[in-house]
Length: 366
Ligand SMILES: *[C@@H]1O[C@H](CO)[C@@H](O)[C@H](O)[C@H]1NC(C)=O
Ligand SMILES: *[C@@H]1O[C@H](CO)[C@@H](O)[C@H](O)[C@H]1NC(C)=O
Ligand SMILES: *[C@@H]1O[C@H](CO)[C@@H](O)[C@H](O)[C@H]1NC(C)=O
Image (cartoon, rainbow, N blue to C red; front, side, top):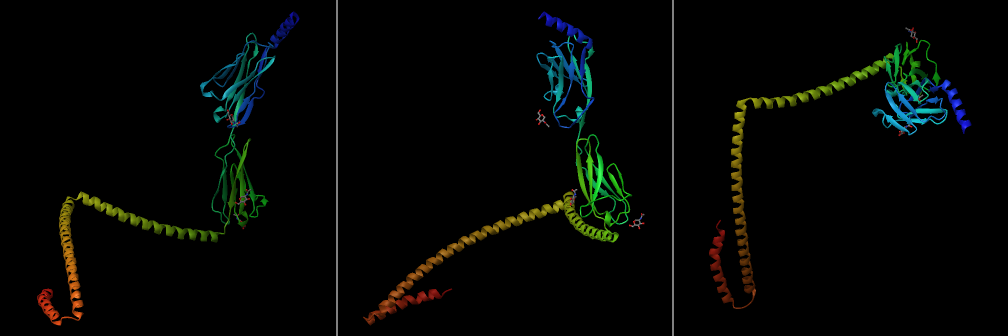
């Protein structure tokens, strides 16, 4: 062991000359927004197996501090939950990588990795690298500027609202049969704008714009239809007719609205005019009088209905009595039709007629 110890001391002595060396392999790292990333950091120490080490990752301020050997970390509050250090300090060379999850544009900055080892403080104990957060181009917005009619100049515009670094744009053209074709020689393409001069029927077709940056690309598909000026006129005539129809409808709506408005205004005017309010009150009074009289009438009418139902009852009584009488009369007729003492029957009949006489008078009375 004494041999190995002296060897270590010797090695240590040699390493002390070499001292600590911290290194981030590249100056710049590029990742897409939303990615979970690792920024690598390696180090060589004069001590083959340092008992203590402190790894610090920072931008302007310290983001995370990692303590070897117990593995404790201190994290800046706003990074809590999305940052960690992946460290391995045992051995002559170690690593102290930074892990950052779900990166945003705000993570677009310089980072420094520092490794401090007691009794190995001579040398390069830190290195820096820039993180570039890239954003894929958003689907470009494409449109035609100008009138697509024979002999005109038009511009095709293509623009991605997002993209970091800013995307470059490229236009490709296809004819109506979807065959690729070269753009006319006078065409100019600048940024996202493609200018077409003195256009003809042949200019019609599909125009594809590709918006592209380092990490991704997106495209749009624009259909260009070039019409002869007469067709444009037909188009504009149709537009004028359409506009006229819309105007008429609008006019009707406006008139209708004005009428409603006028009614409302009238109401407001009445509310403001005391004369009207008086007259209105009079009218309301008269109206309530009328309602009273009307309810009187309804009462009287109800009385009449009651009396009428009384009369109906009496009338049904009379009908009952009358049917009794008819029964008796039919009895009499039965007896009369039987052969027997005719005189007696005759007397009966006379008596009956005597009775009947006044009775029939009664009946004839209105
Ligand atoms: C990044 O890590 C988080 C957990 O920290 C996980 O939910 C997410 O899916 C990961 N994203 C990617 C792109 O790997
Ligand atoms: C436009 O093109 C037509 C033929 O397509 C040509 O006769 C005319 O001279 C051109 N005009 C211009 C201004 O280039
Ligand atoms: C562009 O759109 C047209 C019709 O909308 C389609 O026929 C054509 O294939 C499209 N081109 C590309 C490259 O997507």
